[in-house]
Image 1 (cartoon, rainbow, N blue to C red):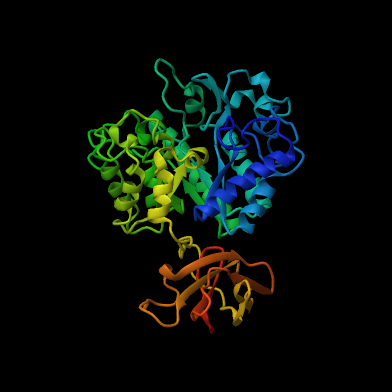
Image 2: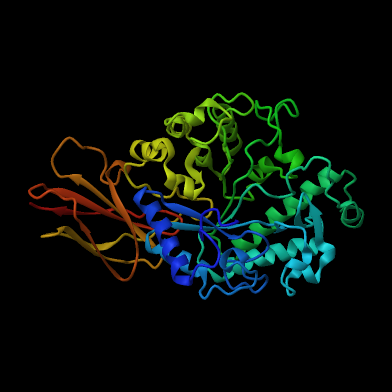
Length: 470
């Protein structure tokens, strides 16, 4: 969106864009992240040759301009080469950052259907209450789902637009025409967004049952003063009331596979305290199959005067300290990439050294699939001049990657061979046979290496050990 992270500016050549993206993916690998979220539809446009919508202006500087390659295909291939999940991030209803409908390319669906468009807050939006507009949004997203090997479909916090003082989102006529029997405008708006979420979930899982559907909403569903079941906050925005997004319902109905509340506040911040909001979300996912990851405001580190915490190098690391005590929290997502790279106050480095000293597997989602792939075959370990070389064969077509564990054959480490503390690396499956060389193996030390198979939902097969002799 507006070239926040990638591409760094419009008009770069295909080779320059690709080099930049590879740099970001390599950053993720170095920091032992295991997934990236890439925005591919910022304003009813596309970072792929969509059958529904034009090329995004954020690639070439001109909407409809062909960048000379397929960015989404490239991103998926390069992410998977590094064994990173690639979640494609779509904005459902935003059409333009300006108000001139004629600035869109003539073939744009919004130009063909101007009655679908609402002008609000200096921007243009599709009207979520028009069924044909909702179908177009779903069709645009499903075009990417059908044609690309993405691991997830991701939304952020934009549904009905954030309130703008003194302005009205003009959908009265739509409400009169398509009210579905609703008599309350706000209830009807929430119903419209519920339909988008439930219909899209059904469509994508029917086509590809393994794809994950995740949403990263503004973290306050409702303040406790508004609803006793809400958070102990006094936030100025409530997604249920202001964005027509009943985020808690989506979790309870299990229409989504993961939720990433944007808990973009410091610990102890009175209007919206990180320490109060995260446990509330843990309660919401408890007993459901929905995974909880926490959205982290890396962009506030060293830049925000909102609360003192953001000037403290340990703030982000302290967030993970809290999260590690809450079993429902299965991970964290950092916004945005350029702020992770900036490492202001050394906060990113501290998080990495404290919490990401080893690689980690993606949490499995047994509700989507719980069958592990068959184990690897004929695992062998051989000492070479470069280290210890492992060789093995793939036995299951469901295997997409491998986890390599290592522990000393003799020593004080008595945890299981495939314990996370022994995880050395993961790598993508590339063919019927596979090789990995451990360059960190100390000469003269005997190790047990264990190779486990993983499918695309991180179900893990039985580990096959191989002993490396001195």
